[in-house]
Length: 81
Image (cartoon, rainbow, N blue to C red):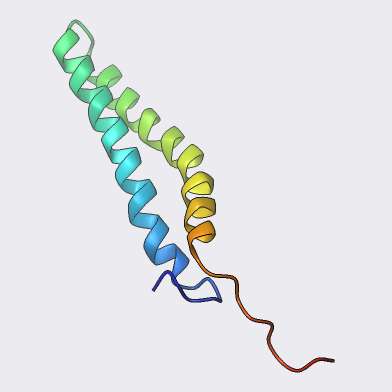
């Protein structure tokens, strides 16, 4: 899938990767906030959601560029002219 030269398989490879990274970051925030204690539930849930959204914004272009670098370059389409 990720070796397709037209990039259609790239999303199928990159999407689960950056989503998993974001879920892991949000779960880490949630776990640490619960372990520390003393925070209202709205702050913990809202903070976890905020961490998830921000990490999606940051990791989406990073992981997509990384995945694109793993793909071989596509041959030119068509003829010479």
